Amino acid sequence: MAPGREVLEKSYGTDGFLTLILNRPSKLNALNPELLYALKEAVEEANTSAELKGLILSGAGGNFCAGGDIYFMKKAADKHNIDALSPFLSILEGAAQTFYECNLPTICLLDGIVAGAGIGLALAADIRIASDATRCHFAFPTLGAIPDAGSSYLLPRIIGYHRAMEFYISNEPIDAVKGLAWGMFHEVVSRDKVPERLKVWEEKIERLSQSGFKLSKELFQKSLFRPMREQVRGEYFAQLAAMKSEHFSEKIAEMTTKKDEGTE
Image (cartoon, rainbow, N blue to C red; front, side, top):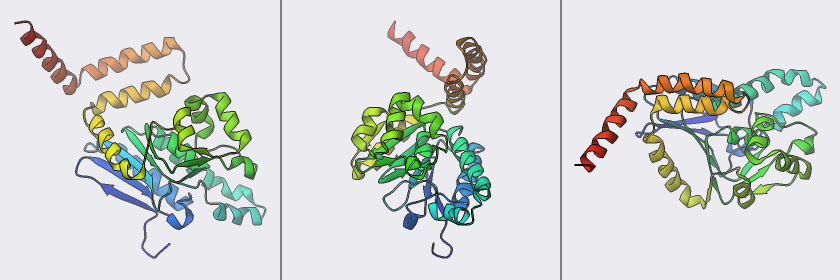
């Protein structure tokens, strides 16, 4: 890493979107403690912003993320002191969960290698746009390790239990075509078309109510582990809160005005 070079680049767009770029291209953007702390802190800071409309996560150098930095992990393995990796694993899980629970709409731009914990980060995003050069590889079976960064939770829910098991047992990469068919990606486009598709999704997000989105995302996520009775109760309170927003009042007035004008 060159002196003064940030492991996580931040770019604040004039359109209200914050782009975070995993920036260790020589290491295929592998995750080390410094990068994970920076990512978690950046997402937490974005959560408190009243100006931001959305959060975009991508990787530098033509790859998204090769997972955890195996050279960092090797130091502990060489000393037969794997317990020394406990803080690293803790911040890894914390960063993934923070990104998953982000109050803002999140978009992940995927390209090249997406491996190990990088898959967990990608799946934690609300929308995943992949280039046709994207290849996902679990890597965990080769190492005798387990899926982490939330991937053991998210992958079966996104592609189904049996496909998740196939992915793990076969230990074969998933290309862009299969990833799209399995539901890992929302879109697959050529590399030169990624900015164009990103702009389309940004425009969709700009039309959302920020408070309504936050409440809806929270409900969708809670629905994954609680019964219907609790979920509809949660909907009741969330809907009351959403309908108190200025956005709701404005849109109701707008829609009823158009309907009334159409009946005259």
